[in-house]
Image 1 (cartoon, rainbow, N blue to C red):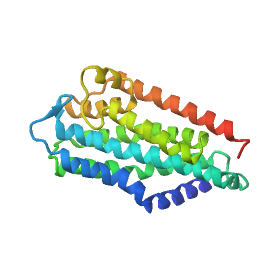
Image 2: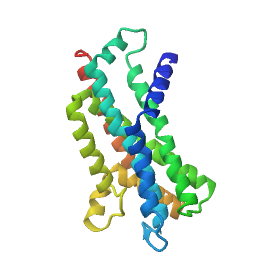
Image 3: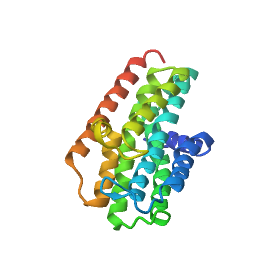
Image 4: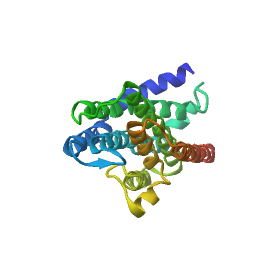
Length: 242
């Protein structure tokens, strides 16, 4: 376990020095919130737009960091033989994947915390302390699904293919999931099946009524289970090749 944690720490240090990672996971959602989050009269899903957009932009940063950059690095390291080298060490076979997920979950915390802080001090979102913690925890735990998906894609595809795949999945999930703007009508019906939409609704429900729909929780858990299965299958299918 110590070796796995050491590997995770090295990955976190490397991620913190990755300018592209920082731009898309922190810079982009912060700029978007500064540009559009301070709408005094608009509402979305029964709460002030500033509160909705806070949840959406925190999710955008966290999910982007967990999926797009992670999948690319896993695929490149698999191609370069780094995973094969690790398997020659005393580390357990699953250490690499666990370390990647730990690092991914840890490095998404700043994106969530910064956007929530913007919501409080720039968007003037006023909430009870437990609601801030609940919203942050919901987004952070939802990030685990995208970290698992990153493992599945990174193990399954070559680096040149990974980037367009992850960008397509990310934008599909974020746009149809209503992270960028609130959904209505047919789009909302489509979005309801996605984890991104349900995580956003969990956040706005906590802000509004202080309760969470069990449908939202079960939908997110179902996607998490599905992505974990895909990750396990991808790792197992490539074990003999690397």
